[in-house]
Each structure stands twice: as C-alpha cells, then as structure tokens.
Length: 68
Image 1 (tube, rainbow, N blue to C red):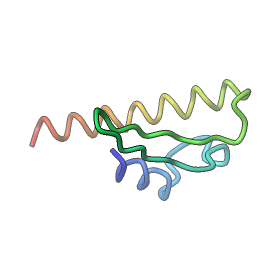
Image 2 (cartoon, helix red, strand yellow):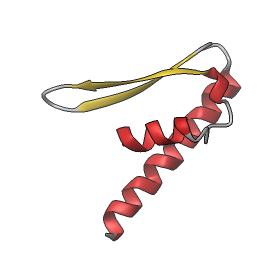
Image 3 (cartoon, rainbow, N blue to C red):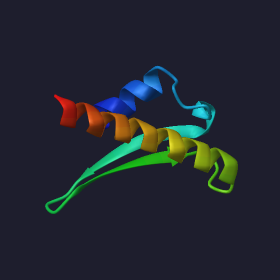
Image 4 (cartoon, rainbow, N blue to C red):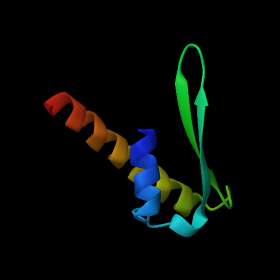
C-alpha cells in the first residue's frame, strides 16, 4: 500500500492533491500504519475526497493481490 500511495501522489490521482502535504509510514511490532498529512484539517470536503480516493486505491490493491 505504501508504494501504491506514493505512485498515486506522483501521478496526481487525488482530486485534492494540493491539500496533501506528506505521507508517513509507521512500522510497529503489532501493525503498520500509513497516514496522509493534509494542509487544512478543517476542509471537510477535501478530507472526504482524499479519504474516498485512498480507500479506492486500497480496495484495488487488495483485489489485485487476491486475483493473482
């Protein structure tokens, strides 16, 4: 998912790409976590748009892994 997120950012697949400021991977013993940093957390429309696109990318990644 890390690679898919980075590629989506590079290819500017997010409609609200100008709102995204960074992505962080936290590797922990029990689970790993990805976080997107945005410019303004109060912009709910942008937050939801980014979240929906990220979820879509994650779903596609999981479907590809299952089918191969």
